[in-house]
Image (tube, rainbow, N blue to C red; front, side, top):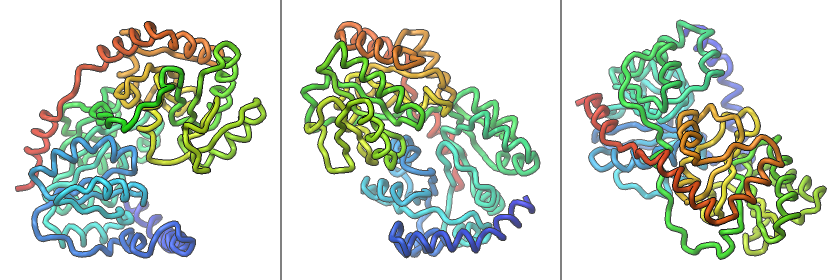
Length: 405
């Protein structure tokens, strides 16, 4: 722990300089810079629950629980990204304030706790900053982890620092892990107090689209693709068009800045792609639409009848199956599914999703699912597989027993 604090303190001038450069380049505002230094406007004097999620994905997954917590508590929500802060602000939640999370300095967190009546700190999914967690624990603020997840790779990294890991993961008064594998890893790293498991992304509810894409039945989506997947999926789409020229593809990269790179590769395959970042609309696209923006995934799910869940053809662990299913998409995926191993195992058992290993597999399965009865049956199977809806009641009850009076 001492080594971590020394290293972080030594790096602090460089970290502050990097944050100031973001202000100079207008990536962030000076107010954002102040918030990262813990220079927040005064909060109200009433008791608060401090909730933290790393960024947009974690915040969106946690929203149903946040909505429940705000019914009976004032909330402070922190996150690491400006886009995440804007997302929370767009929810316009009553009795809720949102700030960028402060740097991981013990004295910063000590000052925040001293100035506010914090009944509990709730961390959603992951983002294990040692000074923050230990400072809260030392201040007798209950600390909870909800939907906790940790990959095998991350767990091995933490295990190299056994003493630090034990203090960090032993600081939680309540851990509700995402699945059995994460619970086992968290327990091995020093976690002690475990409650009911909950996958926050399983609570996702799709918003009603304002309009339905009239070509939805012949449109498929490659959702949150990573480098190394786009080439495979675009090649698959070219094969699809050879047999079904009317089919459209929406490709939504995990990192939108890769949009131009993907468009250039698509040109080599003969596609004339339209890009959302160039203010194109889906209606303007012919065979391929590149959805290279943030915050619009619901729109692309709603526009498609089939979804290839990416991060699964390369070793990224796969993304959530719950969001495409909530939008009534038939699901395809690759072999790398570590992040959601249990839900995908249930889908496999119930024949609620199809695994693809290469471009030919993707093309053949998309074409098969375009036959309406096949897709309808697979969606039905998927709902049965994942339909044991996890209610919040047990977790909320566990949190209630953890709250500081």
